[in-house]
Image (tube, rainbow, N blue to C red; front, side, top):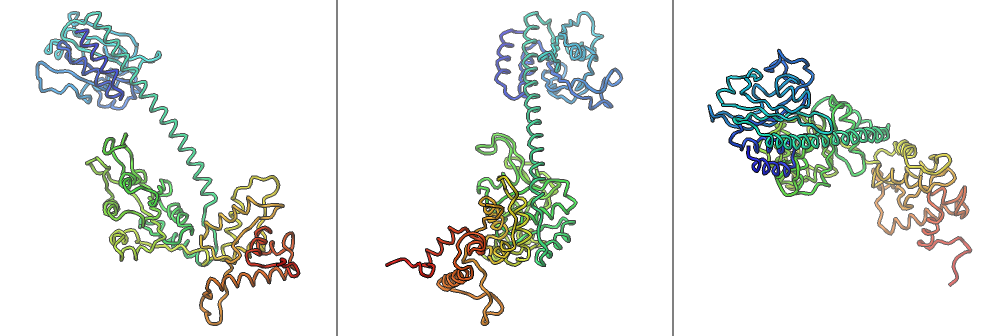
Amino acid sequence: MNPETLQAAALDVAQALDPKRALRTIVEGLAQEPCVALARIWLRGPGDVCDSCTFQAECPDRTECLHLRASAGASVVDPALDWTRIDGSFRRFPLGVRQVGAIGASGEPRLHRCEDGLKWLARPAWAADEGIGCFAGHPLAFRGEVLGALAVFSREPVTDEAFGWLHTFAHQAAVANARAFAEVTGLKRQLKLERDYLREEIETVRAGSSIVGTSAAIRRVLEQVDVVAPTDASVLIEGESGTGKELVATAVHDASPRAERTLVRVNCASIPHELFESEFFGHVKGSFTGAVRDRAGRFQVADGGTLFLDEVGEIPLDLQGKLLRALQEGRFSRIGEERERAVDVRVVAATNRDLAAEVAAGRFREDLFYRLSVFPIRVPPLRERSGDIAALAQRFVETGSWARSGPRPELRARDVEALASYDWPGNVRELQNVIERALIGARGGRLALELPIAAKRAEPTDTAANGPALLTFDEVQQLERRNLLAVLDEHRWKIAGPGSAAEFLGVRPTTLTSRMKAMGIHRPGKEPRG
């Protein structure tokens, strides 16, 4: 064995960052020597093929053995034989059995010349036919732990210098394997932390995010959830922004047979066009610039569970075809990968768009629309379920941020009255924000509730008995001014404090005085001098 060749191979190994590649580089480098018939590396692992193992009759303990991980060499009897395979008869060696097993168990190197006899070999005839003259093996040891064994079957005697080089290779293999083990252990530890964190987060979020309300409109939604949840039908949840479509999707998943599996959410509006395909289906390393590692897509992560496509109307038209195929066939392929993967995914989609109108305008595929809307559910806006405002507000008061000392502010009857008089263009999300802001500014156990004064609902007129009156901008301003004057007169122009106009309106005194100034309203007898 030429020391210069071995030194060059050792340098190649040092540059192999991937542990598997490092093991292959070691055996391939050794096999380049003309005298080396076969070079192999085994690593310790659990007993896994005991019933078919060549050494099952000799195995003293089936819990652990040596697993063949890298092999290289060439036969002089039959050059067509593939000695790079790692699934042959000697893919496992029991610890303590034969030369390789003895090295793995004891951690001691071995050098055995075949002129002393071939009884120690499992197949003496093979060694004789191939002209094997020497066996040399070193343990793969790292920090006192034996991780495996490196073995060389040579057609010539192995010198002491070459035997020392084998020790160098064995050490490199041990370091590479230890590094890989440490990386895997670290990743497992990190994934466990992330999993535990996400579980706690999900439990916390879901604890305060169940559907609240007893109105007829919300009862219809819950009845539809009960009907469709036990099936695998696709669900399309429609409704304005802020109505709680994601809560309905969660309710469908939680009431389904897939509840124990994952609910994977994809916000289609937040994904850049060029990353849509990767986000949904994943990619393989090197498939495009920036693909530095394999990545699983949302479909693969959701296998066996539910995939929630929020704002599905934002998916680019040119990518809707691949999504449709994945939904219809339950199969997809990663970017840069030829083979297809099968998945079992239930899809729930949500949109604040009129998808039927989008189809008519040519911006959404008709076949995808029908695939998604097998069972549509419309989530009503808050103005259609005003009877739920009190319960929703109370829930947000109970779950909202409260960092001050003392009791949490309570929701008063006049607060509920003010909330119920507002049109809520931002729906439930806006209500939650208003309550959160009111908690932050609370004083003396009272919510600092602020709503636009002009946002009172207009009462139906005699000429518009079937709906709210339609007013011009100037009429709305005049209505607000008349309402404010009436409130001030009713409260004897008391601006702040208990029983004040500001308290009745649910705004801060400073907000009220600002609105009065903007409207040119002054207390009688207090008009500014001209």
